[in-house]
Amino acid sequence: MPYNSTYFPATKLEQIAQQFNTPVYIYNQRRVRENVRRLKSLFPSLPVEWLYAVKANDNPHILKTISEEGVGFDVVSLEEALLASHFASGRKVLYTENNMSDEEMESAEELDITLNIGSINRLKTLCERGNISSCSIRVKPDVGDGHHSKVITGQKDSKFGIRMDHVAEAVKMAKELGVSVVGIHAHIGSGIQKPENLKEAMEILLNVAKDVPELEFVNFGGGIPIPYREKETVFDVFEFEELATPVMIRFLENHPDITFLFEPGRYIVGDAGLLLTEVTDVKDQGDTTYIGTNTGFNHLLRPILYEAFHQPVNISKLEAEVNESYQVVGNICESGDILVKKIDLPCTEIGDLMAFCDAGAYGMTMASQYNRRRLPAEVLITDDGELKLIRKRKSPEEMIKILFEESGFSK
Image 1 (cartoon, helix red, strand yellow):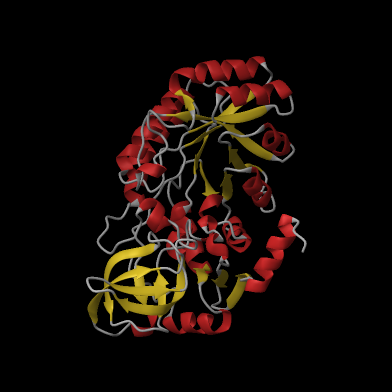
Image 2 (spheres, rainbow, N blue to C red):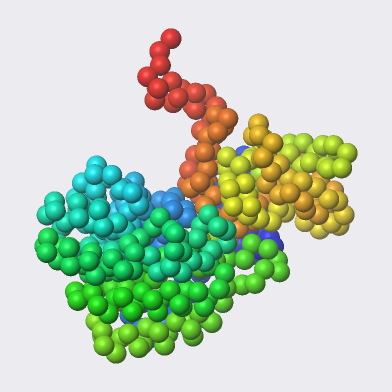
């Protein structure tokens, strides 16, 4: 979406650039809370709970803010599970495994969290160990949706989840081995395009859930999108509420003690963050004029991985006329390091501050140190408008020192 000056005033961004340098991820705590509260206002008369998908943004300060709003956590690795366990426990943390190793499983069993198993083989191994008394299972509803083919997870040929025709077998096997299947879960994709597809997956999941005798909760997954372009159709959560409510009410008629779960990630933090960078070059190459920045796909991977769009805004020239066409690129030594292929902006100069909007989700969590470059700092604009450094940016010297230490290298 277009730059939102309410949550990210230009004067505040300029102050952050001066105080903490660039590139820097900036988050607005108030916006995070607003997004959570909007979701929690849905389904007021139904037993609905929310789990935040930690992989969207795992900064501890963000997790603490979300936890304060009464939301639990959806985690997909042992490391995320250990992190989330600092803020919640029990049914407030659901660990959905994907090709889990025995080592990860053994460590996860020691945590006070719920394990969600998406493979009959892994379920059998887990149950045979006898260390847990209950778990959840992830199923594949053969319905998929998402903003890109790489993030659609519920389709027929997906690697995720237990096949629908194997669910009864999985539940029976677990019971015979002394483990109750108390939850059933499905996730059809990230950035769902049509609310109707999520509703269809819910109906399929509930049709299977009615035959799981010890069921306590049904988890419909996440995937609620945000708009990244000005004219992009907005996923109306209130329209979805109207579609989904009758589906859940019908199930509750025969299963009154069930809790329903959803796992939003992007929706909570996506528009609550941006990546602030500095223009380091403007290069006329004939047919294309490039804006070079001091960031790249090592800090914002989504454009090259998913062909995603993050609106670039020249913070230094917010009032200037938009009259030039550019391609915005990064500082990584790769031809593919293109952040925006074609965009009209004000006449841009070296030293201008540029923001990539809606980067609060899958920005820093997907960042790397490719080309041995440092990760950005992270700064939180707190509820009261103060600036809080929530992740320090290492110096180049610190980066190399750590590399030598971790590699065990000595001269």
